[in-house]
Length: 259
Length: 254
Image (cartoon, rainbow over all chains, first blue to last red; front, side, top):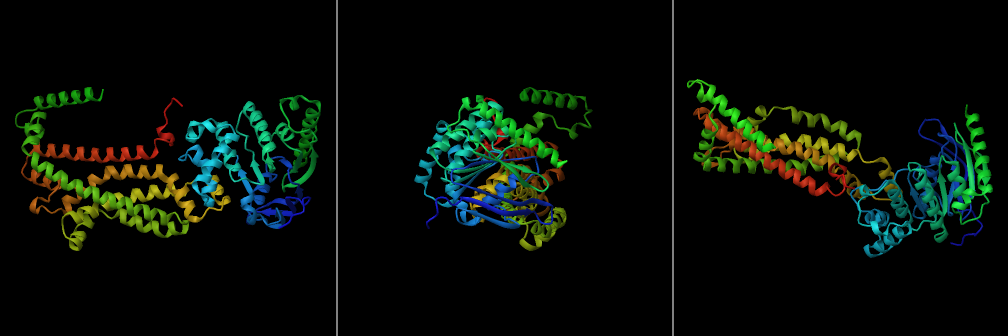
């Protein structure tokens, strides 16, 4: 299968979603992601940002419209995707290593390959020395790292992250943001990231999609042209701070729209 | 500290014995009289305890195995639960005293009946707890498994069963305390005393008929001991299965 290098890796066209007879969650959502994009979805609660990740992942079907993931429909592209949840969602009875191996185990890959990949993924998130720990022996930030290592273990082309750092303190969150970008320098994936934090959105992404709620629509898009790699210094730069201000303003106007 | 409490209780026991008039004294044998009954009836008690223990163990074991299968079936859907639960309740609510004569007719008195009665008593709490565990799996983990394209089998055995273990062991603890009680009650109603097959329930009937209060106390003590052995076994099992990962066994040094 030869794919045009310029073809979007993920494309949503007129996507609508409602659960059963419930209200419309997503209304005609359309956007496309190019390979290597880091797209953050931000917006008031109830704008359907998490739902967008769920429909891209193929976990929930769309009610109308079309999604193309790497030239396929989402349920066919499952092996190219990895999902990082809001909670670490680790299996408490499995050690860190065996948690990271789990997706490979479910796909039926052999044990030797699993061990190697798990070790590499854990090294990437800096937890190589915690392989035989159980999740309850780890801090919140460490659990989230394991969750990310687990997602990376399947070598995804597309990473879906649903507010993964929302429950962490600011220091830990900043650290993990930097680590996430550092890993992205080594492994090229396209990321869809959901957050409530404007600062996080600007720091991580090259594109921010601002959404409005009831029903969820794409309100506007902000391009973040700050160069990668981004570090602590990026946070001090005037360009970064201006963007944080701009996006906050847009977000406030969207909130007002809601009322 | 538990030792001190025990010594204190024995002292109170003696005090009550001494306070009673000689005519009343047979109502409450002094500790040394119970101890003597222990020695005198030792072989009979040991034999009865073995018989009861065997019935309890068999009934308990069968209850654990079948309740697990039943819980797996019940966890399939709420429709299955709604259609089966009422009948399980009937099984639980039928008094043993009514079941006993039926069982004696069907399988005859003795170990088989005792085992079935123990099973009937242990089965329900096991089913209820294990089913609850199987359907209480973290929603996010289920989503995660579905995203990984896990098969239904993988979802059940790699996710639902392990996450139901704490519930399973709660059921096991309840059933463990009920097992010896069940076997003794079963022995009273459907035991077979012929050829030394009688259990602790049978001894209770004999000793109470013969007015051997000391021996009755000794029988009660052996029954308790047997119950403790069972519960200790269950606690040891649950420690083995859970202590590494479950919060209920967490140490504060982490």
